[in-house]
Image (cartoon, rainbow, N blue to C red; front, side, top):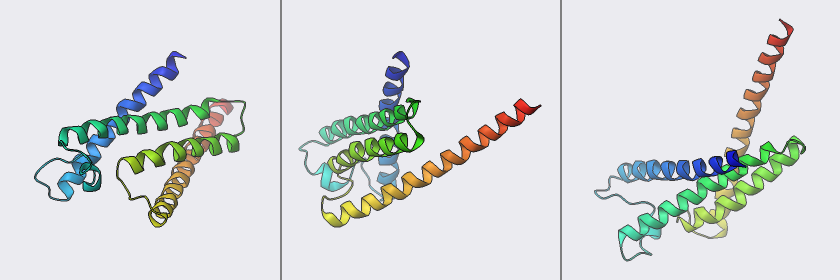
Length: 148
């Protein structure tokens, strides 16, 4: 249980770190003179820029929490890999999508939602394939050590 709490706390911290790094990157990329935590459609909802930063930090922490919680699914050893993958995907998608919308990362309409969903699925499948390759390679390495 202690490990789960630590994983979730680390997830929040990593979410905030990634959010900060990406927001700084995009602030520089767009040649802005001032730091903005998200798109203008998001920051325009706030009377003070500081409030937009605070809400962004909270959203980034929640995003990190979602991804940490989703990773815990793979610790359930009595589930099949298929079930763990489906539940993991559902946790990630259902947890991250509303947070991305709240963060103003894309306007809420059917076209943008479908575009987001396609990109999300493609990235998820790519990451899953990379992880499967790494796990298979590790299993092969362990089996070779056992044979020696």
